[in-house]
Image 1 (cartoon, one colour):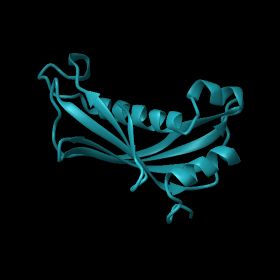
Image 2 (cartoon, one colour):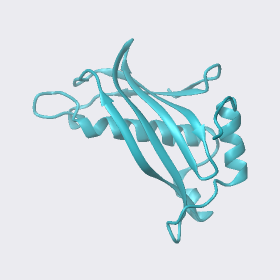
Image 3 (cartoon, rainbow, N blue to C red):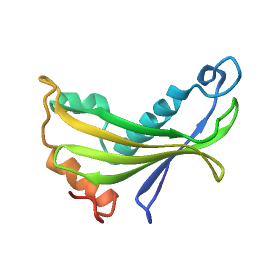
Image 4 (cartoon, rainbow, N blue to C red):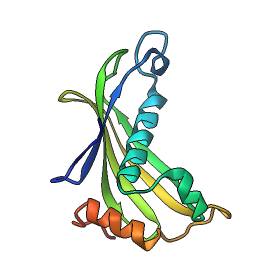
Length: 147
């Protein structure tokens, strides 16, 4: 089940850890936290009425510009996790997400992920289409996002 918490503008996605997500010791391989976060951002976009494959048809797409990740505690095989995506800053051509991976109340991993909007054909920065920009602004309650 996918959930968006309306009061905080935070989108949440439940994720189960499978054997394919872990290393030989049964601990989630570090890069897979980024995959979980990508899924949460993708589902957040889907909740706004946009799908990645359709964005290219409109000649734009989103690419990760940078990631600042802190790993706090390991997740293990069969853990039920919650992955969040909250828009921290909305720019003309960029989005800054705050994301977390939790097991219950325990914070396992957190990150700031900067995403850039680019033209699908040239891969050069371009403005976020106004309709989508407005949906991001509304979904995130528009508080202190600009800058």
